[in-house]
Image 1 (cartoon, one colour):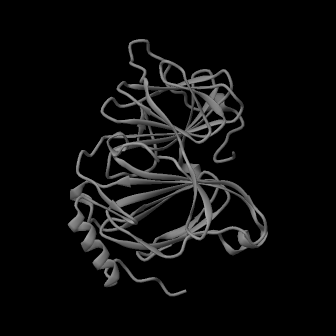
Image 2 (cartoon, helix red, strand yellow; image 1 turned 120 degrees about the horizontal axis):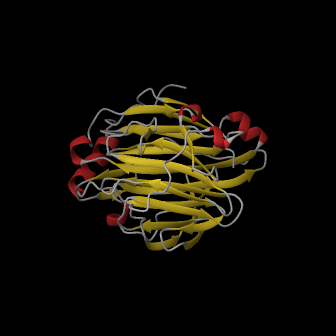
Length: 310
């Protein structure tokens, strides 16, 4: 799992050593993501399936895309489709994906890059593998996370952030047993490059077997740990967790993850709950059913954007 790696983890800035006065979060639930297909037929795992919206807030939805090794001609993406009222955060671990949207945003992301699209009042976009990857085949693995917007920001101007893997804050646990990639938000005195409307923190951590990492976590944020690969434990009680599983954590100001097998990679998310009604249907996330109807009407009338010429 390449993402962003380093030759010498011990040379990186270090997280603060575990403080015995801090409260390590306990595990409230562990769920296993079911498999399905998205877009034109690429395999996904629905990471949030079976978890209440109250536990996820401010997040809405997350797909683990792959991990799949495509044969030549097999790579698939999505067709043009609309969004309104939230943000999509696409994190590429292996492979390449192209993005284009009706607001003029877009680009190509690969190992360790993130594309952060704020749909706001409305946008059309497409995500697909480049032609060269379709021809050659190859490994494809990533995540797409949907971050809700509060009512006051749902109709803001769309925007696009291209976050290169080289700009992500790289940190290590005090003993060097974990590599921590801070994509957005804060971990103590360290800051990630992603700019957010909703206060959140997103981390991708690789934890070696027998190692443990304590992530300082704001007490007013929720806490979610999704296992991309491998196996380990999470929480103060050391609850076992493995690939494709999501742990919802309780109150506290520290998230603890330990490795029990080679290749433990976790995606850790948390944010300040918005606490507003959520009306979610298809590609739109609003506050009321009436707002969803307006979103569909605006899309059908072409008010969410125009597909750029080829």
